[in-house]
Amino acid sequence: MQQGPPPRRRGLERDAIVRAAIAVADEGGAPALTMSAVARQLGSYTPMALYRYVSSKDGLIDLMLDHVAGEIALPEQPGPDWRADLRAIALASWDMVMQHTWFAQLVHARPPLGPNMMRRTEIILQILTRQGAPVDEAMTYAALLDRHVFGGALQAAEERSMRQRYGIVDMKEMTAAISDLAVADGRYPMLSAWMASPSPVSPDEQLELSLIFLLDGIAAQLPASRNR
Figure (tube, rainbow, N blue to C red):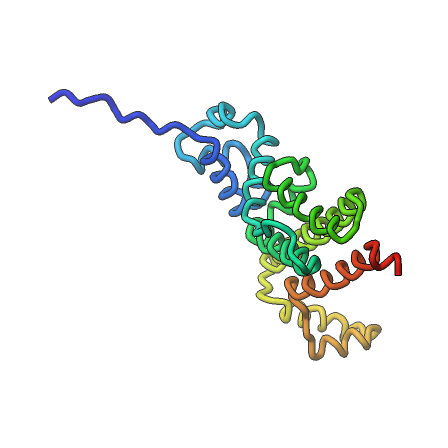
């Protein structure tokens, strides 16, 4: 019996390419992100096939950044407590980046022009301008918040990678290793005393604490505080 033609391979879609690229970056970080790796993630495609749907690797990165930015939960509109709103956005942003650590490596290398990132910035500006901040000042505070959250997430991700390279399970193992050096040297009595019974603070806890300081600083610059 004569066989029919082989089934046609399903065509690529831009969203599938973006999701494949995110999977590659989630697995191997930003250095693993190549068009060849994305093509392999999709199946039997060549890198050149991807360029029918994305203009360049930079264009793909733009789509990836904005796609995962859409995972950040945002309020529909500012609530009565501006600090609670900004804290919630900051923590949701942190959670997203800790799931996609490559985001912190790449976000400052590309213009934040995707619709999800612009929506996030817009709601932060609405929250701050409702407290009397001019738009230019609100933009400065929004940038400070992003530098703090994304910069802290990058540091946390790099520290986690370092511990994995050296087989260190948690921060207690890290402090124990440093403690041996500090005690042996003898010149760091306060550091040695703390390390004898360490109480390391996790990156999540550090973020919570530092957000208090940052929001206190913003509050002090808002017109209601300056006009007292």
